[in-house]
Image 1: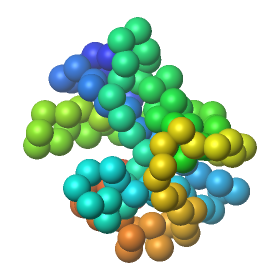
Image 2: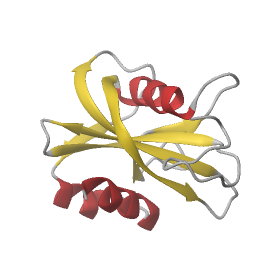
Image 3: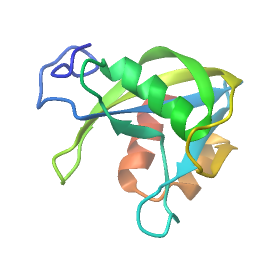
Image 4: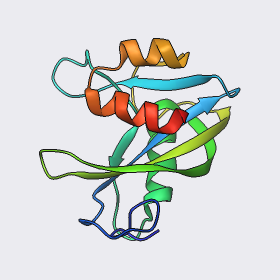
Length: 133
């Protein structure tokens, strides 16, 4: 998938970010604390797509950097356009191992229901719902 493609194949605004809905043991999902503001926001791992990087590569890199989780992409979830103009491709990732994260973020493995309660933003909850279907 190139930077202008969305998961599912439709063209849209160019992708600027990629993220992961990481799932462990088929029943737990990962949320991380945001580095924005005072870091009380719980979000999915995501970040900028770097030059020469695919959206899939960016999603896996961000997952490793933010939470130390290594996994494989199972399928695309959806693409989301935020009010600030960012276009994020999210991927369902099956987590298979853990390494030391590069960033100092708190992360939590949660049941779907607990993740829905803890997630700060409606966009995060919508992505979780789309991934869990």
